[in-house]
Length: 445
Image (cartoon, rainbow, N blue to C red; front, side, top):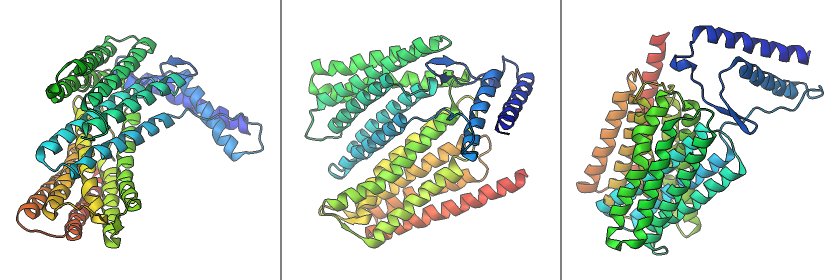
């Protein structure tokens, strides 16, 4: 019976694959599939034989769970997102919160812009590393060592450039250069290992090499040049990836969009969780919890989570030019908003020894959530038919920005009243987008 079921699954896969082959010609974009690792070799998927083998493996696995006593081989389908990638997400999310942690110590617009620039560079580093796993799936010892070395360099860089007095500023930029050099080596490995050699894979290697050399040159330059070296080196390294490489890979069908969406969602989820975790860590260091404040923070984070995973990312990504770049820009805004909101939300939930002035707290809270909802609106705008959700998210963005400006310059409210207003706006946006989503779903049917 087990063998019959496995044969049936494989036969269905063969028939479906042959039907797809008749409908999609090799020249069409839909015929381009993402490579996957099979053992140590990289083979292109999309062939009928591969589909049958994958279906047979899945059938064996399902049957081994159902018929525990049967003589069925223990076959487990390949895991797409590796544990190394999730570990990398945790370190990057913690680095983001570390960056904005110094905003409470050095309050100024110049400091916010500087910290946001560092956060954007960290996000670009994360995205470039994610595309390495996207282009060449797998989790080998060599790749783990590369990623761990890059993580160490990234943490040293962040700990320096967020104005910590424990690491010299030159060291941070040099560490970023080392991280970029490691990234160049990883992309060179992709270029040499890809089943189909492509000249597009040479672009990030050259860009990261030149950018890393420029960053490493800060060791020979005066300290007054550090900010300029950082900005120019980051642009040299990451701008070609964001402006040229990603659109080319997308046009050629070489990006696994399902994997990329999972990785973006995982990073956002970890950042939401670590915002609450930061409050717990400060509690162990002497902060007194405000019961109502802790509940408010949990409610706000839950609403943001629900909004993102239910009504913002519920639409598939297409291969149309420009849409993926808009989605990535929206996630960059979302990450900046979540990172800066952690500073204010911590003070909502805890009574700290050194508290932010209430006008400053209101400005950070309103401005950070304006960034969060601007990111939501940007992601939704990338859809072919954003329906009625886009105007709601734009209005929520304007409401958060107006509240932040109003209560930071005109009226002074305590942090919990301000956070209740944030809850009210975000909850109203959630309910309205839910209603708009249900209306569009009914009209589609």
